[in-house]
Image (tube, rainbow, N blue to C red):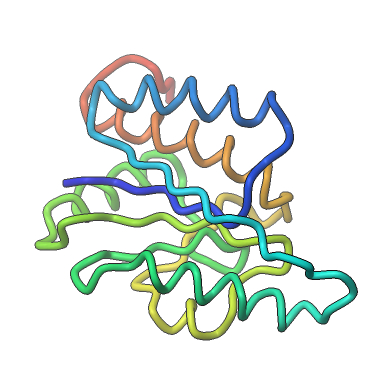
Length: 157
């Protein structure tokens, strides 16, 4: 099973990209993680959020394959404890899907066309985080969940 992390736009924060790179390296012990960073929407200017989300959606939808299991990271998604998420991931990795694609949207969230394509919506917290910070938080949680499923001692319960 392959796992992809699809990111809307680049980050200009080195501490975020360095942190994500560190967890990408750690995750490689368990599986291959493909990080796909979509280019920023050009010339958003003062355009409405719906226009920006629609442009991001075009780029996102072009990345999805027919047999992908698409999981949106969204504050309105399902909340899990670490152990619950580990169990969910264990089951998810048994599916026929060739790839699990976790998607971090842009600053305005997801266009309805992306939400319609999603198989699942996952929340990291009831709090709202910037789309930049979510990258790092999710990379750490993915590593934590994979380590739990492998029986490694990273997570303490």
